[in-house]
Image (cartoon, rainbow, N blue to C red; front, side, top):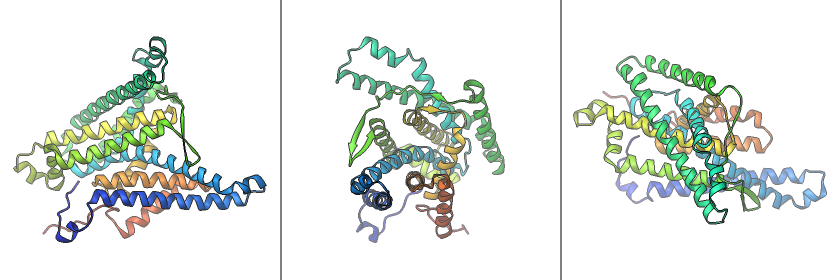
Length: 373
């Protein structure tokens, strides 16, 4: 969470946000082209003459479908990765409990949808089923679920910081690291006791409707997840760069002692960091349940590991890097599945991570910081 000073050379270039947008669009198009090539070659090799005749249209539709899947998965990974990178940027703690905070968020969303006066049944019984009213009401239920889940998970994350991490702020770094692992195990075992070990089905707020894009059938909930996640990421970036608390967070990330001497309340700033990270994990938890349709008590480990890898790949401590890293992880996983190598997807992700860190130890967007004299 560092600011980059402007220079005469950088002032003549396009703003970073514009360059990032252009680069993202170009990257998605290149990714689509690579998928299209592999899918087209695969269709040409089919013994079915009908499949060969429709090789190109089928390849376009399949590639567009995979790009859509990657964007939705990347949005979920990015939201979780932002929590990792914010905490590390402020107090240099690898919060291994964050994946399980995300897992708890999936169940908070589930509990809300199943216990809040059965909202879906309530809507069907008492409101007219019209093309105008139903989307508005279902949208209100989704917004309410997000608001409740983000609020609860933000409060839980602040409580974890206050009880588990703050007393160890002056301790050797290994102490809070082990504590984070302990908090992760506590959350996982508590949810196992409460909900059991099986899959729990999540009520779907948005009807299972689809939109056709380049021949691909994209679910409406996928579009909603992607748009809302991007809005949350942009809002976080604006908050950190434009608000007083955001400036305090950046100052604390650069030098805690200097920030405290300048009047920054460290406890408030760190608590706000955990609050925002927990809220984003809560939003990701709602999206996880709505996209996949089920949740489990043990999904926090794998999702947390992917999000942490995304943060390191993009440059841990850098908000943009964490978001981009989340999408890169999803693109790699989906590509491996598209070419029939799904079982190697995790290995490929870590090979890419190792290669990137060999040439850029601080990650793609991380800044190289020299040792202080």
